[in-house]
Amino acid sequence: MGAADYISKPVQQRTLREVVAKHIPDSLGQFQLLVIDDDEATRSVVRHTFEKLKCTVSEAINGQAGWEQIEELIPDIILLDLMMPKVDGFEFLNRVKRTPEWKDIPVIVLTAKTLTNEDHARLQGRVEKVYEKSEAPLIQILGSVSEQIRSILVSPHSS
Image (cartoon, rainbow, N blue to C red; front, side):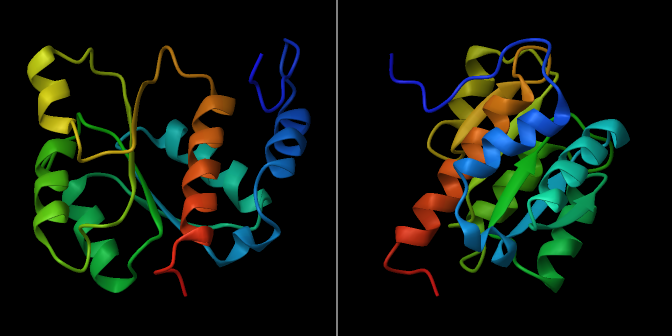
């Protein structure tokens, strides 16, 4: 039915990693993922999952810290929460998309916020995917990041 793979519930973390790893290029280790989320548990799950897949993961607790991370090392992919203290995801995204060196970084939004039509309009064309934390299973999020990695690998601009 078009699915790349499936996992039966209850999902075991080891099984999840094995299934996702089959669909991620062997060269994943060259990719830098930046997770920007004020929720430590979310950052931890993403970090541990992708580190086991040999991806380099950086973390930031808000948009301000995210900008500081990008100034040090430009990531290949950003997982972004929208509702954070100091600098929220919308403000972070505005600056990223206005900065020539950063504007092409793929961004996947992972948020607990119930998005309004106005929120969707603000994000349209600026992010790759939007997932609500309460609705998006980890396998779906990992699949989206995997898709982004594959598109970077086949991009004529990749190094």
